Amino acid sequence: MSGIDKAVVLAAGLGNRISAVARDVPKPLLPLSGERGSSPTFLDWHFRALERAGCKEAYFVGNARTFGTPLPSSKTMQAAWILNPTEDVSTSGSGHSTWFAWKSEHRILDGRSRVVLMDADVLYDPRAFDVLAAHPSPRSKTLVCTEFRNTQEEVLVFADPATPEVPRYHGKGMLETPMTASVRCVGEATGILLWEPGDHDALARVTEWVVRYSTAKARSEHEDITQRMMLADRMHVAGLGPDVPFMECDTPDEYEVLTRDMYPRLRATLGF
Image (cartoon, rainbow, N blue to C red; front, side, top):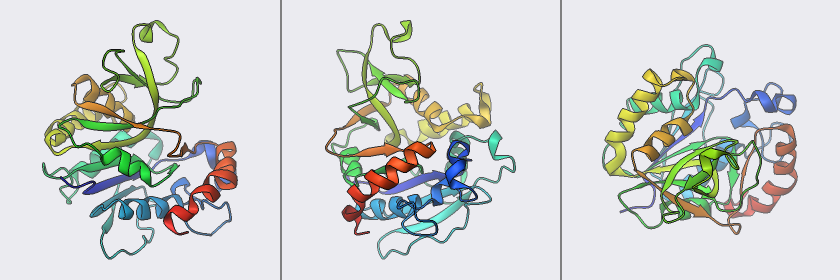
């Protein structure tokens, strides 16, 4: 079984929380150096990291503002945009964008490929994909940072103490509540998933249910889909240690840290 066959990068979000520094630039297209108009952007980073991981097909789900942005060229990886056509993007979550990806003409969930699904607003050591793709198994995987902060902002992952490799649920603000009294926090969710071929049918059906029938419907995030796959006992944890840096970027303060510290630390890993 190969490492990673296909990938879907979710790049249709609003990025309202970072708008003070992003101004008119969609968050996935922000430069990692902080220098306006420079490259690489978040999308450039994902493209090269996936190419390095041996991915053969990469799909970027965009909205009216990001869709069609020129992508880097590659001799080994095909790439294309998929449009989330929702006019009011505030009514469409990343779970909805995931639904558009699965429904697209590209037949991403083919029952044969290992498929990555991920947010666009993250920066990481490219070795994160090596960790995610290691040890193939029937269960799909959620990539989890094993070191985490006890805040209300991070999506934390919980498992039974006896089986810490099998996540039961994840969410924000759950630590030190009755909901987690009998379980163990195994880390912070990165928003990066690997869907194994045997889960493709279940994943497509769960995505359909989330978008059509869950409380949030089209506003659902792709984490809502992951939660249902956890409930279906389909998931394993892939642990990302502190030696493989990872960072999510939601706010101006986080973007400052990313441009000042994280990107200079990592840029050479992909030759930028």
